[in-house]
Image 1 (cartoon, rainbow, N blue to C red):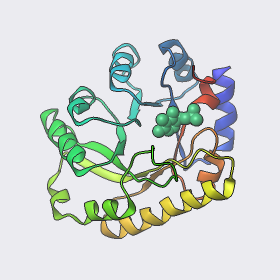
Image 2: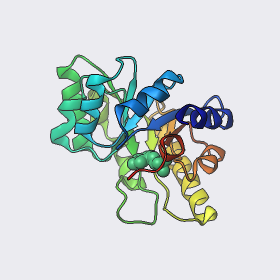
Image 3: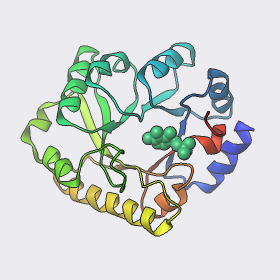
Length: 216
Ligand SMILES: *Cc1c(COP(=O)(O)O)cnc(C)c1O
């Protein structure tokens, strides 16, 4: 089932868009099924769950952290995490830099920008995002590499709303790129909205339930 779901998805996603399989709450056996079907990029939301799974699953998996990250937990994922999608403050970025240095690594990060109508979703405002990129202090954080943005749309059936939010993220990304040319990635699109996200310029989709089934 997981293999078939992945193959169906892959045939619909353009080659320039990376598929991150979101495996939160799913057992290691499900991840192995996707792994055996060739999947290597997996996304997790919780630090403890991620470290547990990373310890028992193949070392060539690229682990993406996509959930809200507390500063005091960065140290647990810094030794191995491939990409942190959810950086939402300068303070968090500084701590990732510190832990990157402690592990002799440069940790790739995306800045999460708030585009949804819901207040509950986290992320920087457009102005905060641009201010962070314009801050000369960013260049000194040489154990982090900021390569793009991440955003989540409003949970709604209204496609016009979702499309306009993705378009807004793309616009903010372009404004950021003018300040920080290293930015190439736009992480947007989940099970319910990824085709729209791809139409609006996504370079990375984060898909869980379409691959692994509904979460309990
Ligand atoms: C859970 C989650 C996803 C995947 O959601 P699905 O609707 O199951 O595809 C993607 N991104 C983030 C940030 C998530 O928390």
